[in-house]
Amino acid sequence: MRHLLQRALQSRTFYWNGLSNLRTCAQGFRLYSKLDQFCYPVSLKGQHCLNKRDFRSGYFQSANCSLSRSCYTNVTTSQDLKSENEEVLKDASEDCPVLEAISYWTREFETAGVPEPDASAEYIAAHVLGYKSFSLISPLVRNLTAEEKTKVWKLCEKRMNRMPIQYILGEWDFRDLNLVMRPPVFIPRPETEELVEHLWLYLQEDLTREEEDLDVLEVGCGSGAISLSLLQEFPQACCTAVDVTKEAVELTQHNAERLGLGDRLDVKQMQFNTSADFGTKFDVIVSNPPYIWTEDMETLEQEIVGYENHCALHGGTDGMGLIRDIIHIGHRLLKPGGSIWLEVDPRHPDMIQTYLNNHLQYQLQLTGVYQDFNNRPRFCCLELRE
Image (cartoon, rainbow, N blue to C red):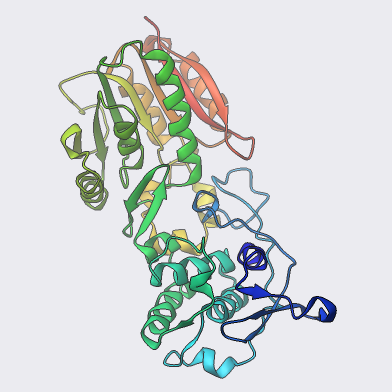
């Protein structure tokens, strides 16, 4: 909410109540709209970022957990965001200002313990009004119609039931792609964008000729985020994407066709095990595998437990189940000089190194470990010795 108000202050649509009569109150500052003349009490305490890349439905409830793919503490407070007409807001059939609706649901989410309360309310309101986010002031200063308000209320009720915002909106941005999201298919996190970025930089250096073929295998494709990003970045690339669930395979195929990338993508529903046979070899194997330890599954947030497929999360006792399979099977699927790229738990790089030391016959070496935005070792590059 804070960034909306900061933009409002820079807009001629809004004004302080007279420079000579600037009013403050115990609740904070009051902002007035020339159009509606409604009084909107706001708090300039707290902070958050509404960039979709930073909207993180983290895995773990504890911000101190060293295992989280996207741990954080939401410090925003909206106790000061009190509506002056609660009855109007509670009645979904009554018109109300957009900002008042956002304020009301921010408070409701916060009271119910819903993560990212303000961002949740803002994204839902923006979605109903046909925006991705409120980059303009004009949509905020008008009233929601009764129909719009009903839609906002219905979607906000889903968020109250802890449905992830990505499923509520039915779409989410991943790097430069807009992907359809459906439960229970795994929702791509910002860390996976970083994985693709590291791989992109690696391939940019490795590919000496623009027309050089690039064959990629993605294990555990989910919504298709990784494969589709690579296909968009590298016109010479062809990807094979596999997943164990029918829902993920269908969603990946749908996103590929929607983005016009389906002709270079082969999607398969299959178990990635020793019987896996693709009839070809690959330059790159990439995966964001399930890597959560069994003991940590109990710490998952309600959004994850209630909606996302646990098969995309649980990596076995030590989180290494599929990672070992990828190493064990992947080395024979790589072309000479090929590489495996993995997103992993911060405890896994050392475990991977130990596993490779104990299986020298795979001819793989851990050549790179990269940190995520929380400065935790999150991404591994394994190269096949030539």
